[in-house]
Length: 631
Picture (cartoon, rainbow, N blue to C red):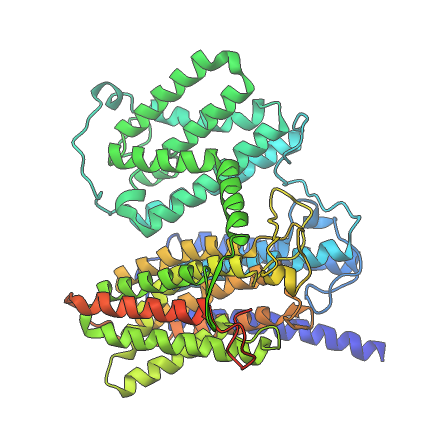
């Protein structure tokens, strides 16, 4: 019997390991006409990356089997925590290896869609799986086990960083900067600056070699900083800055990708020059770290940083654009702790801001204002992008989506205490139903589905503010008072249903808002670059559901069912990602729109905003009929 069970596990692993690559390969083939970038590197580089990925994966699987007595599958996890082999250096080396394998295969085969779409989304999915399930599961099963690895970045504790932490920091910063630079340069190096400024810095223009001192100025930081807390701050800030810079550069290259050097006397190879480029904000972050550590050296540190920065600016495509973007990123990343506390404290105030007004049998609740304003703004933005010809169709679309959201939640969560809940996945079903209805009415349903997908993330983000006040979608308890928020109002679901009044909870509504905010800009960029409407809808499903999978792992609503270790909506998120993959492969031609604007757009935005406000902010508290009460 044990032999049969063991064979079954092995067969399960083999089947799973075959199915995933086949699906990804089919997906890449289906998207080949979506992007037209040529392969990024030679077949030899692809072969090396692919072989390296296979070796790392095999090493990780062998280590799990030998030392952990398990399989590299969530269904059959190891019985013992593994810190041997590649697990001594990295967390989740199998996923790292698989990422390299995908990059290598798609470079080797010259698949642009595989490299630029399938690979990053697959890596994002692996990150979501780790954050939304595996990391939490490991902490539960191995509570007292030291889970640190050699390539961990320094923690925010007092003390002096050890050599391993310094080298690990250098490794992550160098690898991330090189990869980000190459990707941005390769995809955007022919982009004309949004603003061709005429500013010149004659003296600094002659210092073509000085800008390369920025690399040394940055990379010396981990080697000489004597405080774990300063090095932790610097590492997080730099990583966040590179990610934010890459995000802006790829979405709006005319503005964000103007930091590359245009000439140099040292390196004639443009590609190598680009890879060694360092945005000005990195110099600023390093200067702050130096000043924090060596306060007496400020008179030397700051002038050196200014000279290097001016040499960088003078030798890049656009001085003003480079400076503006760098100052913005420097401000955000240098103050990430302060910004988070502002967001956290604001979220806690909103969470305890419930107000209501009764007129006879009718009650108006203040949280409905958030969704009403969000719906108004979303419909208005839709109308401005597609014109008044689609105005009434957009309004009907909004009606149907809200009705389906109410019907879904009524089936899943409706009870004596929850007479009128709303559910996001009902809204997704409503999008498909509304598209069909409008197709019957003679509208181009794909235009509507596409434009709704663009604005939905921001409308959902506004809806999450309502969730804060209402107490729905709330998080699990956390011991981290800097991270968690508290609910006190007796009307909040946190207090009257979950019984978690006054406890620090994960601000899952805030997690959702932040993810949706960045997702919205990405989808808008796809729309402005004339991607297929079905592709935009598919990407909407994939991105929002990936974020939802992680968010759900930290939610603590007692009424949500849990199946096989995952919450109901995590399974729904997985299904949505698969549906999104299918939608991205549907070839829908893009219509040339010439929007005409009129009063109809404003009218339908007002009507839609009021309807949403009424549905989610007005109820009948003395009635016990279905859909009567919001709380």
